[in-house]
Image 1 (spheres, rainbow, N blue to C red):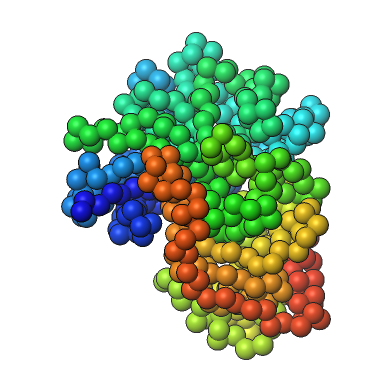
Image 2: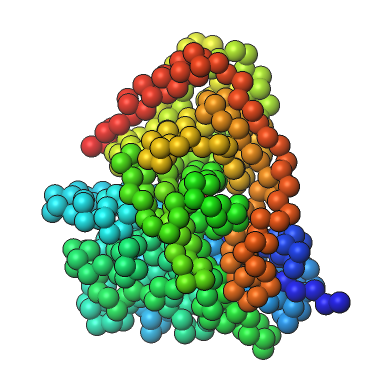
Amino acid sequence: MKKSYIISLDQGTTSSRALLVNQEGAIEGMVQREFKQIFPKSGWVEHNPMEILESQMNVLSNLIKEKGISPEDVKAIGITNQRETTVVWDKNTGEPVYNAIVWQDKRTADICETMKKNGLTEHVRKTTGLVIDSYFSGTKVKWILDNVKGAKEKAENGDLLMGTIDTWLVWNMTGRQKHVTDYTNASRTLIYNIVNLKWDDKLLQALGIPKSMLPDVKPSAHHFGDYELDGVHIPIAGIAGDQQAALFGQACFKEGTAKNTYGTGCFMLMNTGEKPQFSKNGLLTTIGYGLNGKVNYALEGSIFIAGAAVQWLRDGLELIKDAKETEALADSVEGENPVYVVPAFAGLGAPYWDMYARGAVFGLTRDTGKAHLAKATLESLAYQTKDILKAMEDDSGTPLKNLKVDGGACANNHLMQFQADILDTEVHRPEVIESTAMGAAFLAGIQVGLWKQEDVDQNRPMNRIFKPTFDRVKRKRLYGKWQQAVERTKGWEA
Ligand code: G3P
């Protein structure tokens, strides 16, 4: 019998990947390509949109070639992407007017300050569910329109389009026909009303963004357009921002279920059901997914630097050659680690929201070695996660029963054990940690009738459950030190 496949395109912050998922929901192949990170100035982070597109198309065609798949067997394509990263391009030429401004980029802090001064904080919170921060797309669009010569006039003439990375990919993959996004990506732009599901006129006006630049917003499972491959039209049938895709891929469908993804950053999302719940503790309210005519909301804790801190050990400090080395290094430290790394390289996200915080290392003594730094860096991921979990439990009023984890760094046993210890909560690691790519595949597969939503929860065997071992006093002591360290990094660049 002929097999049916879904291809999941996972366009992340540091690499583009294509995964082949068979009709049983198993991954049969994966091709990945890293692309260039551009740092023009301190605090600025850019990507070349053309390189993103080329790398994504390249991994897609290599996957098909390597696996010997015929395009007829691919029933649909699902797309998941780094969120908030923003591209503005000329719809006549297809050329971006500027590099993509990446979610980690801090250049729009001043625009955010002006928005705050103009009294928009509460309006932003109530309509978009977000806080005013350079993290989101809206201020990045304004920066491009204000700083690229001729861009504002072109935008006003209706010649420019904007989009998050999903939108950029789909526009190109559909032969420049479809200018679309899904609810989850729109909910990260700072200009989308997540309650009435419309672009927000007041915020568009405040940022000087013409409506003609904006994509149509659709549910996450939807026929977004077709990608033509060797004469075969393959529907693009699922789109979700990567963190929401992971929520879906981990089958967090019930209210109160949550996942934590350890990628470049670290993002914890909790499904809060069909009504948005607004945080009192610095979390974001965001759209979890739109499916079958319904919208599910989530509370999100966004940590900007997680795996990227391990990358810094490797590429910045050159202390290690491979991220995997951190596990043995951390294991080699005897007793408690006196060193604390606060990786606020891109400011602090939830629950602190300090665009001006910068990274710091505390507790150095003459005998500090690279093992301490490696361990402290891993521990910083766990401490930041605890900050978020605390806020989530305070908002929802219920302690989390267990934490479902995924993403590259959750393979690190030292980190996962420390995570369980510092949270005092079980950490559940599934066998397949590709929840992001699987989430996009499931959305697309559900749309074309290959699966039902119930199927997502099948075949999810656990790899390992990490149980907490610290006593209360130890946990409190270590976490107290972390909180002190965080306090000292705040407001550094202000
Ligand atoms: O909000 C940013 C997030 O979507 C980036 O995810 O996996 O590329 O770190 P990742």
